[in-house]
Image 1 (cartoon, helix red, strand yellow):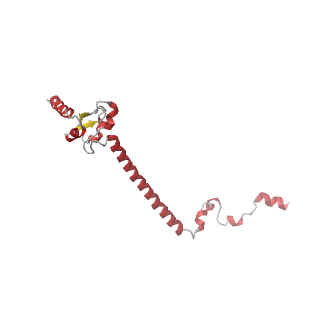
Image 2: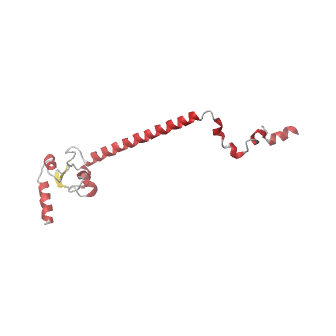
Image 3: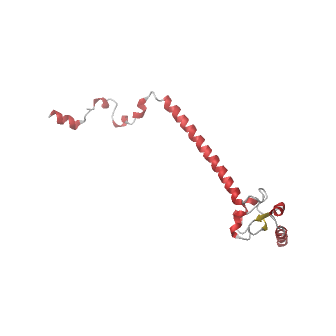
Length: 149
């Protein structure tokens, strides 16, 4: 019984000889290179090539499948390229917006702390005590002993 139903669906699709007639029928998709109307039972017909490698009679036209939502002039490759391009553009816009926000906050913080120049020299407190910096010789120990002898 299931085989008869599948065969009937296949024959219903294969009977169409043009793309528009094929796409007008529910559950059918068009393979443009072989001019074949094939049954497509995927929930998202556009993604049928991802689920069925043999959706079209010729393997080279697998991703050139035409489906109902977009019509005869738009292939699966074209649709997926457009979706990826839009998503990449949105992602790039979000990254750019995030960079602008971070840069503005950093500049604002930098402007608020400009009066406190000692914050940039905080690493010196690790090397020596605050008073020790005042008492160190300017030329170093080796040059002081050479001039005194």
